[in-house]
Length: 323
View 1: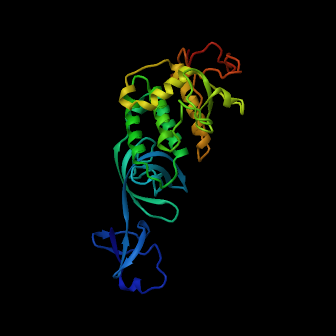
View 2: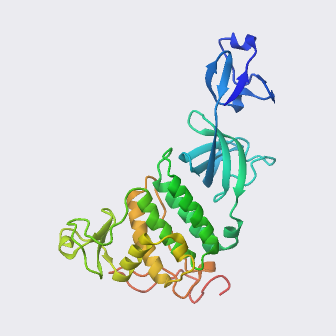
View 3: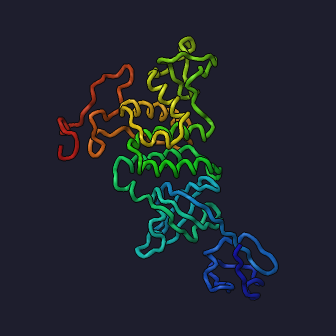
């Protein structure tokens, strides 16, 4: 707690204005900088909470301020206001940028937390040097923000996200790390997908292709598919998703699998996450131009669609910028 001592003349006034300057034990400052949460023995008590957080995204607030969305270990998803963060000369640095791990000092407000101080711990600079790794990391933050509720602590998910961001920097196939994170994100949020038993009749399904219902969160056997059409799930993709559920992050950091197989697996997971997102969530398509260029890039065609890939006018025969 931090105490703010007001002069007796101010305490006797019936109209306390936020611009009045109080006397502090260690210096002076404006009362509008502090959240007054209590009054005890002639002193207003100010509460500042300390949290460790990863910045998800930010948006402008007014002319000079900014609102940051923070995923904290102690409190879950929190929104905080940074006063003066958009001024040319500000002391917030890169704390409002996505992917930054920092220690925040927050004060309670009416609708938003008020950021008072921040200490940057890790900016994940290596991720910003590689386009593919950066986009996968930002997509992981977007998926998390769209599915996690505010003020709902998820300490295990926070630790998992920290490990995934570090794995994006070091892994030989970051796309596989993204698939692993999305599998475990669904489990951490309470709807772990089922890949062994039918979610409708609960019988065990033999290995091989089967149906998959993203709304119900699992595979569907042949007889149950007659009661409602569901997409077809390839047997190889099913085995990969089941395996990702059972392994830990260090077990896949050095492995590389077929890129098309991993992309198809993520496509299945995106259907589950989109069905449970609390906010509108944009599921990005796999880019096939620019730094993502690959001989196997692009999502595999869904059943019933033409295997041919549409090309934009002026891009025929080009593999990327300058290709």
